[in-house]
Length: 273
Length: 273
Image 1 (cartoon, rainbow over the protein chains, first blue to last red):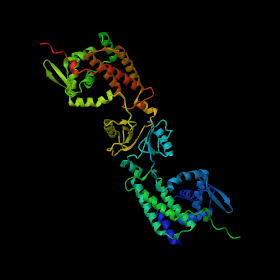
Image 2: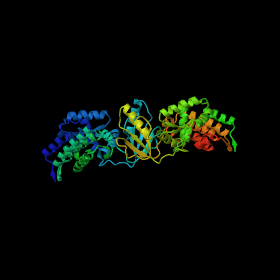
Image 3: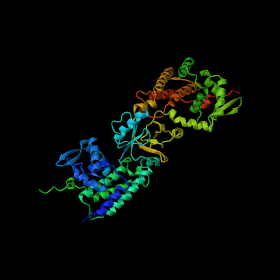
Image 4: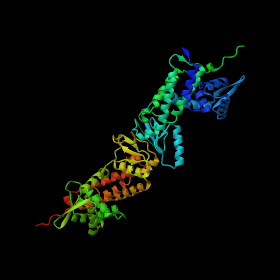
């Protein structure tokens, strides 16, 4: 096993961040979702500083972002000696847990049945509310006032027309609606960047725990940013040649090369007495 | 077997026409659809006069309506001695044949599968054209831009989202859209009128062929006028207590009591030589 050289680590970071200046709070959300969902998991302020420093994020910017996330109720902190220990709040934990299956799924399974749901004709503001409530239950709008759900018709859909069946017929206009061209281009660009990182991380080269934390954070962050811009649907719902599945596979290949470090491995060794 | 008395025949006609003045051309369409769909079937002008006279329709009004239907390409005529013989044109025959299954069906069968069809979002004028084309293929609009068809997804629905399945869930707003209250009231009124006719035509009383032609025409006409005001869907697509099925059953009970006369039985006996 060889350690990852500083130059290659830096090259990985350049490949992953590109010209972007990722928002720090959003990276923190990714990091905690990736490493600190276990009950009681905490990350200290020195560890956070060391994870963010290689990306060029100053302690001051980190402090501002942590403050914002605390105010938003996403993370909480407690003092420990001269540093602070940060953890997800129950609400932050819940929201992380809700996003985790989609972000880390190795494939999107197609259910045996789908169903179409049709609310009564209603004015736009009411329809927007209905659409929001249905989206929260995983429904996908198809056209105005028509929603697609997974599985059989649920028992509690009084007031809706509903029809369930297998394997919908998917026209090109709908595929382009789910997977627009600019998103395909963004996926292809990400694929190129992940490819570069994969080349810098050949089998046998092992980054340290802090480097791993930084790299995982950047990989997961880039992936989830694109993933969450389109609906969670199987490959045949997207245009021909859609690069989502390839990008997903490459993301997982990289994450498999960067096994999640234990949070304690991120902390500085206690000063000897 | 007793003949139907003139008074009871007149009472039947009053019950069936009520306060309506039915449009003569529309009655002629019903009559030819009922009696003259066989190849070569013709009805003479004297027979038509005798079928329409009991309803109070004068020969002049009949001539005007026949003229209009000839101009519209629905019927054609040829001279035969001093009278004319009328028959459906190929186009009139085709349109009659198209309406016949629905009008004379003893029940509306539910298919094992239904499918929902969704065209791409498009401006209203284009959507109206699409809706018209789909209606001609038997599709039922559910809400704006959503269409319900019988059976599995057809092979030629490129450009549409489609999902097929059994037994849709039908909300009340959709049932009321298919079967509005005023139509239910009209069905109930027709049921009352048909009941009166049934009472005037007890088992054993047999109207003559011309009386039968007149009565069948009025029964079928009243029935199809209401029937064609709502979509051709099974009973569970309509509101609870929907009177369509009862009215259909009573219509058929009456038509069974009034077997279709042969067109030749409507013609005056040839003058003896």
